[in-house]
Image (tube, rainbow, N blue to C red; front, side):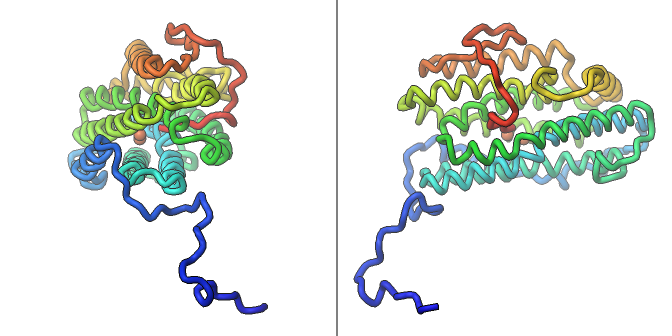
Length: 341
Ligand SMILES: [Fe+2]
Ligand SMILES: [Fe+2]
């Protein structure tokens, strides 16, 4: 192989770096709100291992209660264990796009937060089951057996969207990606605050309070970017956002409400088993909001998002499941969505 010619031998300055190049060498500052959110994320860092685990006596619960609480953490982790790579991908994109400095840092903070949430799920599940993996755990009760089958189906469904996500990230602008982020963050912030308020165990109270606060910050990040970018959105992007919102509803309903059967590939008794687990967990002092509360939370989150999109004349999809009319959106498949939690 011939030695590579050294450009520096013949040129005073190097040629321009071909774009998009993964890293910017600039620290532009345009959106002050983003700086504030990032600063808050540093102040509010928490460590799941430092929660009051010593006050949590897992042996004071029956196996059915332990398996039911672990089921809920498993359900959450189907979303939160996919969030770190999802947000890490978005963070890389923010570098490729040469986003302003604080936007890059905010995405880094979301990645870290989501990893924390995932870590928390793992600690809770491991403690409750005495085993670090809910899919290979040996169930001790009949309900635990059914819960594990549910978990396997959730995992199967969640795993199907990763390729779609990887294809979507380079294709869409951050503004389009944000549209479905926001929906999840709004609803998540609400549900975690409710779970914190009702939790009997201090360790779960603190975890949910921290997670809820993190999700509130993620919501603010999305909102700030929408405010910055939506006024200059093209028409084509508006249509994608409408579809994306409907997809986000279908995907996130599984954890924030109940999984819509047409979209999720699940056994017929899935919801029944999930409700049984939730009832057992609730009776044990693990506060999962009731059906009606979840429905109302979800509806409110969607209405809040609708108010944001209306401001920018982005058509909202019909979500008849929670009583919201709008543009009919059909033919949605897991492969098309950019789901984020
Ligand atoms: Fe999260
Ligand atoms: Fe989040």
